[in-house]
Length: 108
Image (cartoon, rainbow, N blue to C red):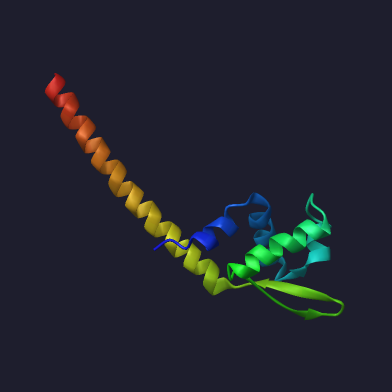
């Protein structure tokens, strides 16, 4: 079963970049991320909220801010879902290829 909220969160390129940065740095704050992305701190905070609701990040107090880290188990779950979808589409495409080849043979 595909988790729509998870894939909606991952589907945005800014959020994917944020996940990349958080993974590479072991975590970060909205201010730190906004310094490295072409969006405002407020936009970063909204994106982090989406990632948090999808379970992809967790936050903890960090001075006057919050420090965000990636939930690697949730990210692994997304990777497994993507592999399942890839496998299903590979099977579908193989069936289409088989049908197309059968039609081509009949036309010869």
